[in-house]
Amino acid sequence: MSPDPLLLTPTFHETVWGVQDLSPWFDSPGGRIGEVWFEAPQLGRLPILVKFIFTSERLSVQVHPDDAYARQIEGASGGKTEMWYVLRAAPGAKLAAGFVEPVSPERAREAAQSGEIEQLLRWWPVETGQVYLLPAGTVHALGAGITVCEIQQNNQITYRLYDYGRPRELHLEKGLEVAFLGPHPGPITPQGDVLAACPHFVTERLELSGEAQYETQVSGFELLIVLEGAGRLAGQDLRPGQVWYLPPGSGPWPLEPAPRLRMLRTRLP
Image 1 (cartoon, rainbow, N blue to C red):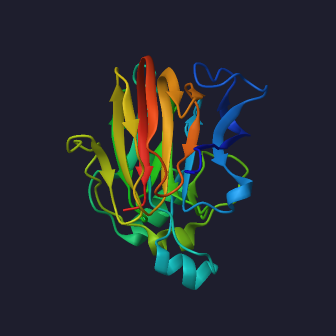
Image 2 (image 1 turned 180 degrees about the vertical axis):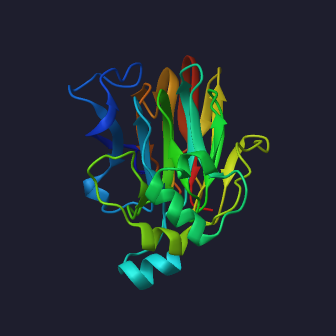
């Protein structure tokens, strides 16, 4: 018998820049929630981590290492490439990705220490439905008033370059060792249903208004992220804010929108 899809468990993380209202994806557990992570203790450490991120203030200017640096310097299993799918954006919301023009490591260090780095970064106007791919080494920061679904390599090494005077540790030297100090291309133009593809994951959009049969790849790792609508998969209720693990080679299962579903599917390449 084919194994059933498994609903991942959300965990809620308070942050200084979080929000209290998580609707329509979650009921608020109280406090200022900035991140919701989806994990499955019975499966162990997953290769891809999904988060929902909610911001009321700017996040730190930060950068993540690539696989080689993370393994050699941090003894980690790998680095962190990630993507953002914008679920909601307040009027005028912006995020930073890359620099307006190339800067030297010395200039970047001075700017991070003085706070001028905010002016050197490229701040992109944010709209619902945009997709940003952030390869390891991309200097970035989410602005206020944004909700994103983040899909990333499941590693948590973050080097903060600047944090607006908050009393948190910075990691300037390591951050500058791994940072790409040039421009970023900005939001992706999707190729059909493929929103983003890199060596670490492929993410596609699924929009359904009629019954279908859903079947996973014969091998690999696959998650379904429910963003909007309702329905049933293999007899289990689907609702926004859920992430489902789909066992390799399982299915096919009936997928029944009620009356429609909007989801993301992310998998290993």
